Image 1 (cartoon, rainbow, N blue to C red):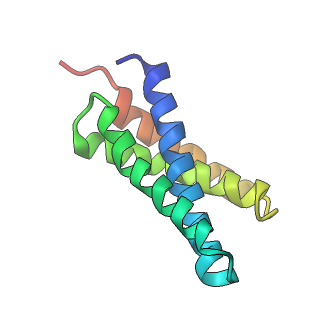
Image 2: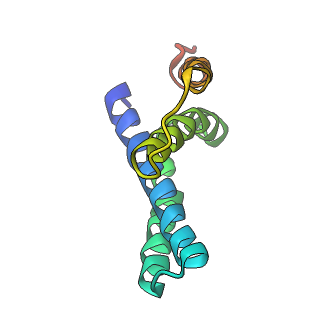
Length: 109
């Protein structure tokens, strides 16, 4: 699998997980309609399927996805909740993404 396709899968996986979780959060914590929860649960189901489209093994995909989840969470908080990341957030994210990239994309025999 090429890296671009793999990154697209990570992007949509993150969107489904964080978006779905956020919709369920709004339903539970802020009294939004059950429609929010239903849509959130649907997105969370897709979150469970999308990583399986990656060609690497389960442990490697989910380890690398952890890095993607960190950046998606920070960006979601910044854009949706309007809480900007600080320099330590960005530094930590950079360190995590380097590690996730090594796990997922390092050449192997």
